[in-house]
Length: 103
Image 1 (cartoon, rainbow, N blue to C red):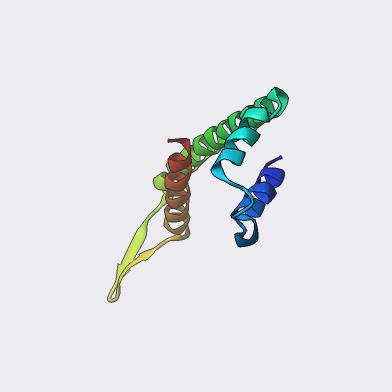
Image 2 (image 1 turned 60 degrees about the vertical axis):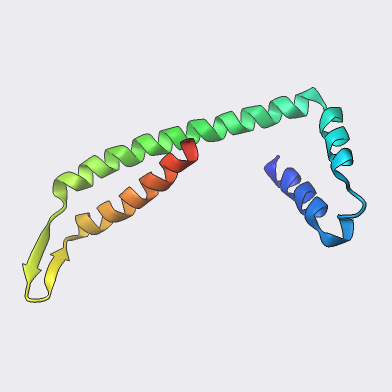
């Protein structure tokens, strides 16, 4: 479904179509859309929100797991992270991005 919307948006944004598709046309198009399609879009967003929430939960569990196992050694050059610390950094970055999607 989203690919159809993306195609329409790209068509609207294309410079050749800018003059033929006005803001008034967009309002009329939005008002004339079938309710079923609007409900389908709502379900699609709800599904994405649910998937993101599940992903955040899984990332939080992963963060806890790797946080308990992360460590670093020190030598003359500074700290050297173990594999778990490297993965923890990646998990925390992904978790931050996922949480931003939920807001």
